[in-house]
Amino acid sequence: MNYSTPASPDLAKTASKSPFVFLISDQRDWHARRMEEALASAGARVARIDLAACGFDTRSPSGLALPQFGSRLPDAALVRTLAAGSFEAVTKRLGVLHALVCLGVPVWNDARAIERCVDKSMTSFLLARAGLPTPPTWTMESPEAARALVESETPAGPLVLKPLFGSQGKGLRLVRDLEDLPAPREVAGVYYLQRYLPAAAEDFRDYRLFVLRGRIIAAMMRRAQTWITNVKRGGTPSRFERDARMERLAIAAAQAVGATFAGVDILLGTDGAPTVLEVNSMPAWSGLQKVSRIDIAGAIAAEFMAELANRPAVGGNP
Image 1 (tube, rainbow, N blue to C red):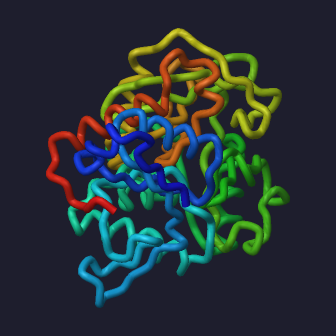
Image 2 (spheres, rainbow, N blue to C red):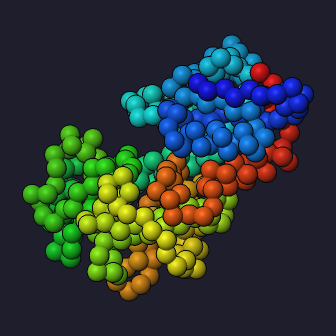
Image 3 (tube, helix red, strand yellow):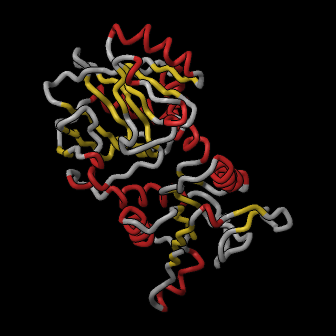
């Protein structure tokens, strides 16, 4: 845990007025360090905590047991990452986020938004339900149903198989026929399949737009040698001329999943129309920052603190 305390007597005098914020991250990577610095610069006292170390204690005043703080609550919490774990472990961690909201603590993004985005099938459901353009998508547990789908759909073009829980382009496969369909154990028993959409350009490219409280603060185009364009998989970020249709779609996609901030991935089809591929409620932005003039962590911190300014304090002064 990293706990930033006032560095001078003058700051110490005003510490009681400074919001006490949990930065939730399982590691102190570049993103976590940037958010710690940005929140502190915006006037917060910051404690980085890992939800794996948090728990419930129904005998405590809050019903929670938080590392080094017992049942004392923060004034707000900002979620950077949740570590992978068993279904039970992840359920408990999300339960802590649900509990914080129940106790009146503002959480960005809250557990509902995270659940909706971590589960790609729910993301696709909500996007389609909102009437937003997104690739035709199917999710099933039955290998027989998956094979039947591949047989009926691949004559019209390939499908993309994605891990239901996954990020950064890991585990993606192009399914052209039955031989490309893996065994159930390789997909954790769930087949999540989307129609593969060819891009309008000759090369492989898509777009990441960063939505923050209903507006676009940064965007990039990603180019790659293969159809997987994620920066972590070798995609190259670059600036592009912003497109109003794309921006409206990204904002609507974030609203559809209930995310205060989100990374929205968009593809321009052969007809030039934008389509939402994914919505990420815990987006990384190191690649995006390289091609953006705005300080992304600083923008998140500024909006976060602006919202807190009009809320009564929830936590204490540990």
